[in-house]
Length: 71
Image (cartoon, rainbow, N blue to C red; front, top):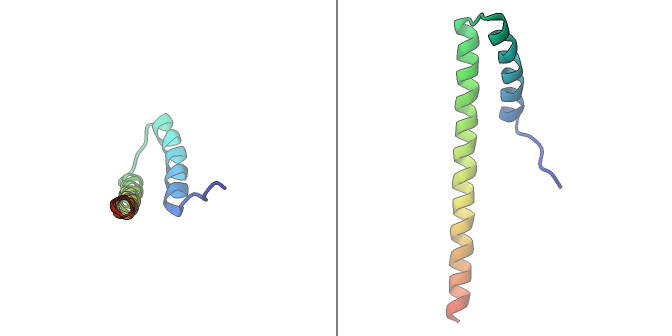
């Protein structure tokens, strides 16, 4: 089962498609740039959250397996 995309991923995809038009037309307003930066920050925060969660589960798995190996 494939997991659904997060809201941040969907928002970033939409902004990236919009950026293609901005680059093609060579116009970029401060408001547009701030939206892109804000979306990028949200993506980075989500990546950090997922990384910390992954590391936490990895540590739990290693601890559980290490405890079983000693017995």
